[in-house]
Image (cartoon, rainbow, N blue to C red; front, side, top):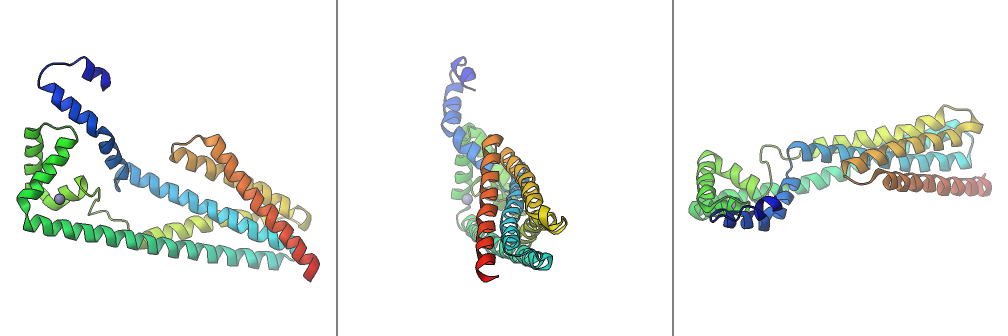
Length: 260
Ligand SMILES: [Zn+2]
């Protein structure tokens, strides 16, 4: 882009190019914040991986802690299952509340936009044209784009260009809640199964190995989705999970020694 600008000094194109450069970062951000499309799907996937990560770490801490206090499989399993259900419900509830609030905010913004379009359509069309001019279109073309988009679906045009909202594709609170529930529960099953199946002596170690494998996977995927370097993210993730298990194990041992 910069080489093109440097080698194209003809009159007329200069203004367009400098306008495009000034606003290019804003345009990129608008694209990133967009809710639909690929970015939206990646966000969902990322939220799912993070939910699974939470499920793995919190349930691992729970079952390893109880295993430090008692050798009874039933007690360990009961604690793990209760932790899975409680954690998944808590995640789902939190997600429901947060997405509902976001949805309310978006709906309010759409309603305001609708009113502005009704009360001052000319000013709104100018505003739309300015947005497209800011994205690098010439004033004439921006005005034409604004006119045609306004004629087709003014609210949709403003929602996308001005609010970065796709009014036909607002996030559903229930869908988000279910996704959190399932991803947390899915993650929680890893330590739960790993501690329930093996004989007493191998329980804690099997669980630790399974959890490390799970955390390497979730750490790797979420780092990749976020565009970050994978190795450090994986290491951090595994260290946090192992620390949680070590701490709860010794708390469990202390508790088992004192009380039992
Ligand atoms: Zn507007």
